[in-house]
Amino acid sequence: HDSLTGLPNRNFVLQCYPALLQQAKGQGEQAALLCIDLDRFKNINDSLGHTFGDLLLVQMGERLKSLLAPAQQLARQGGDEFLVLLCAPQVQEQAATLAAAIVEALARPLWLRGQEVRLTASVGISLCQDGAEDIQSHMRHADLAMYSAKDAGRNGIQFYNKAMDARARTRLALEYEIRRGLENGEFEAFYQPRVDCLTGEIVGAEALARWRHPERGLLFPDSFIPVCEESGVIRELDRQILAQVASQLANWEAQGRLLQVSVNLSASQFGDPALPDVLQQILQASNCRAAAIELEITESLLLAHDQNTLDTLASLRTMGFAIAIDDFGTGYSNLAYLQNYPLNTLKIDRSFISGLPQSSAIPQLITSLCRILSLNMVAEGVETHAQLDWLRQQGCQQYQGYLCSRPVSLAHFNELLHY
Ligand code: C2E
Ligand code: CA
Ligand code: CA
Image 1 (spheres, rainbow, N blue to C red):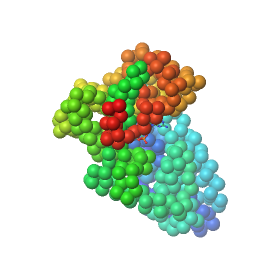
Image 2 (cartoon, rainbow, N blue to C red):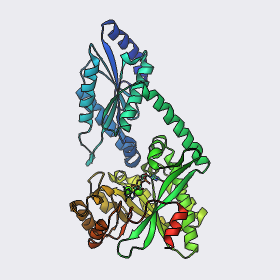
Image 3 (cartoon, rainbow, N blue to C red):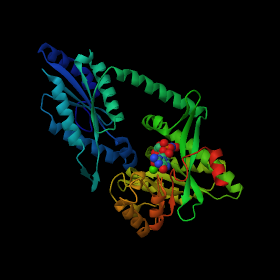
Image 4 (tube, helix red, strand yellow):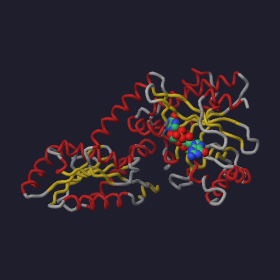
């Protein structure tokens, strides 16, 4: 058994489920295997610490247990994945009903150590009539279906189908290609201007990764960031982008041009205690001032008052980096952290800007919040003059968006600077 949750573990499944499958067959029943994965658990575990993550897993295990009948076998597959084996004459409908109940139950908010945590789950279902002969192929199918539920936007259910095998092969090949691309320096920082709302002057930029693929041309983050996050390669990517930005900032400064560039830092970086040292090395290698760089992190990282994250952020601030919260307003609506973390900037998410000037309640709230807490405010995704006018009137300092420019190559960005 698994020592954390007390549930049967993966080995148990491999040893005992074959007999259960056999037995079901003998009774004219069909089997379904459900693979349940907690969405974004890795983020929470990285940012809030393993103890918190463990507590969360135990709670989720309890929720699952309470949903299941005794004959429905629950196990912990490992990490944040659970398995349920279901045998019944007409298993397909039962599996769908059960999976829906699981998704609903796991999505209910949870209080842990005085924190409200919101998780969702993705469920993949493998039926034995789909050619799963043994427990291994059953597990593989359920796993593939679970990944496709995640791709479909998480918090949902997918049944396995054959096309998923091909997709898995493609994904693995992509991961390999990304690693190779990183070794060959194929990833490049593009720059989207950050503009002063009042003067219209370009005061900096956000660096956004692009992949100059030798065969497929210029690729955008949606085609590689998810695989990078899943495989952990994101750390290397973020560091390469940061190194490019740092050396470019030093160049500009040598030309007398003071800019601040923000880079995106994946939450998984905060699981690495060496992060401040790594960043320090990058600064030294390029002779760049830390203050010229703003690190963009996501709200979910700050979900609880985790001491490790707080310490890391504090040392990054002491080193001189500015810290921004990206996509502000889309994550957890816990505002307490805004006071407790050393932040400089809130970047209001594009989804709130697109409704301006008609739907202004949330942007208005965020502008007040920034004023009261003395935080710099950057509006993302500004596309129209009407939006900019509204932001200017509200005292928002800076914006990014197609109104000024899309993210562009370094050469192009340098041209924009010289207009
Ligand atoms: P993000 O950090 O929220 O970046 C803003 C995204 O919005 C960019 O997409 C940008 O092209 C797009 N955008 C900017 N202005 C407008 C506008 O006016 N209208 C519209 N419709 N869209 C606009 P992009 O470059 O495709 O990046 C997508 C996401 O990928 C980023 O979202 C960020 O989360 C992630 N990402 C990109 N580069 C990196 C990186 O180097 N490291 C990490 N960890 N994540 C990255
Ligand atoms: Ca960003
Ligand atoms: Ca953003």
